[in-house]
Image 1 (spheres, one colour):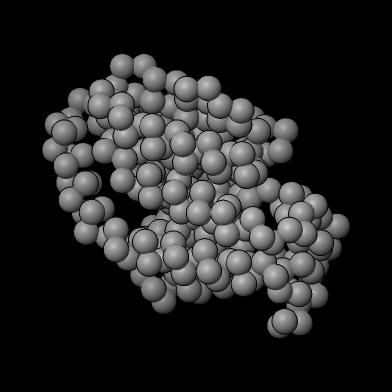
Image 2: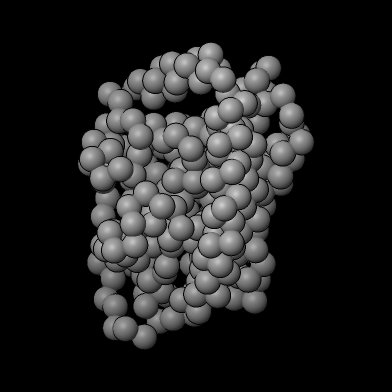
Length: 260
């Protein structure tokens, strides 16, 4: 499979997917969203692959959605289609019959953090900057961010974290239960390699079967949340607060929200 914004390597029972827009901090543009959806759907047919690792090229995992593209585009008519691609990639990723591991260094924010949270196991370096920070640009989480935050934190804490948009390091996220391993800077690859070795030496078919049973029972709620996020994000995209948020982000200033 050849892609423009991601790289996929398969070696025996392990696949590695690399987000590959390093000059844009691996921000997810429309092409990357579509390619991720296509890639995850295609991986369902790779019957010999039992582990998938997701990581980012360059200095970060992913800065999230491409905010500069949002500023450049005033066309809201295609936003529903974009949300469809996001829902497609989330559903395909969540239902993969393999163990998924997010290998995080640097920033993992917004949609990039939603993707990481959809993984079975999350490893982040201690200085990582982890944030469900859609609120800063007047949006709601997408990429099933509501679903994954609720799974790991419960409803009340998930709401509070989403509303706050707090930036956390690896140790802080680990203490909250948002990630599974916080490792010293520069050791994410080594830590993930050790985990992969342990998992591959385990009865992994039984592990995958457990995953499939539990995830299948959650699909109704996942689909409901994805639908709500799609409808809600289309509405938020047209608010005055969102337009102010993305302009302030690009101009590197504090936004002035007015509740409209």
